[in-house]
Image 1 (cartoon, helix red, strand yellow):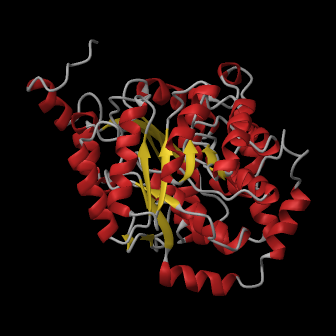
Image 2 (cartoon, rainbow, N blue to C red):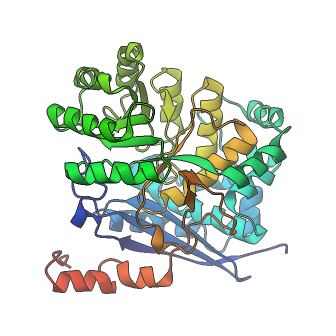
Image 3 (cartoon, rainbow, N blue to C red):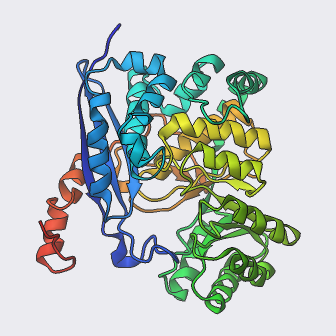
Length: 446
């Protein structure tokens, strides 16, 4: 086929009432309703692509409008030409002279970019008949690097360096792929530690996931130090000290406050403190990292990191020990690949942020590609796993013995079930209409 024309593109606002049970609750986001802007691309050859960006309820309508504003750059295009010149197309999508003003490459416009770009990668993988991790793995170094826009990061990593890094790992790729297909990729769980959960629920969930084979656990902290000490002690009582414990403050602290707070938690032998302060405060993260290094506690961040330039600075400043890319926060796979290359150059392992709606489904592909093609190792690397909302996907994650098993179905694992759309499109989906009628949620004002 010489052409596959994109004939239509659509976006829907989908929301799930996770706040009812405090699922996803943390120090900063106390009542999240896990949601997404869900993009569908259709073509004249019958291929479709599905992509999304994760949100927390209110505001999803703003992201969907941003997606709609960008559709004119996609509709009518030959998808094969996009894939052959993906870096150029990505720059075009992020450089609209008027839309760029309300970014640039951050916030709502970049969330919308991610939804569209994720749908395009899903489309490409479906055309090729491969899951995205396999599509990425099978691209030549030159082909893969051609998808990345190196603007603003060439002082740290160049196209030539990126190609060289991939070629160095070419030997052993087949062996690593077979190993991955057999054993999967190690996961850690955050499901045990949402801030709104009772002590009994936390304890029970720790035992549940311990029995499921998990050896790494994460808890939310940041509102009350005495409660955090109590919670960490409770978790350690169940999981012991042979397993890893991480904590996540979700941006709630000042810099010095973060240092003092985490020092009081040091007795629990934490692997990392995640998002200790403002996600934009590169130097603040660096200060925290230096202060906690003697305690063996690393700093992790990235889920709210706006773009590759922010990641570049975090790495340059030695502000993070663990790099947490998010599949829907920055501009989709193209930009995420650049972060993997920079992280490898700085010797910082990537441990993706996941959970939400579809984040687990997407980041597994990226981390599996990294293992096979780029870093060549899973040492000190792990993928976050949150056990909720997977039932809404046609091809959900498959986690066995605390390991993500590689998806085998073509695409980015992003296609939602039709019934889910009928039930949870906001505000007219059947489930939302039911909850409005029953007074569970207030109906939005037109």
